[in-house]
Length: 75
Image (tube, rainbow, N blue to C red):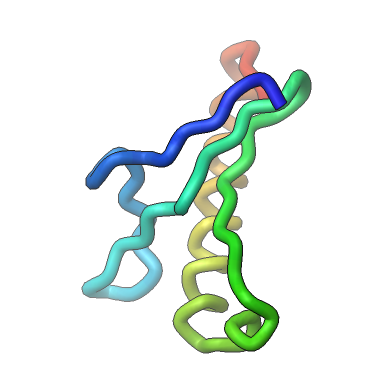
């Protein structure tokens, strides 16, 4: 790990429903990539809201990676 931070309010606004935004708990940068991190207990993994946030975050990461790849950044 190179660095990490806890995003402040409105740094990330990832829409996961029509009326709700998601902000990841942590962002981590390694030598080769950048990661959104959202730790959860095992009993939370199948929660519908957690799954909706995960899908939205995956879509956001797909677009962010494409942007970074086009501009010489890290996925």
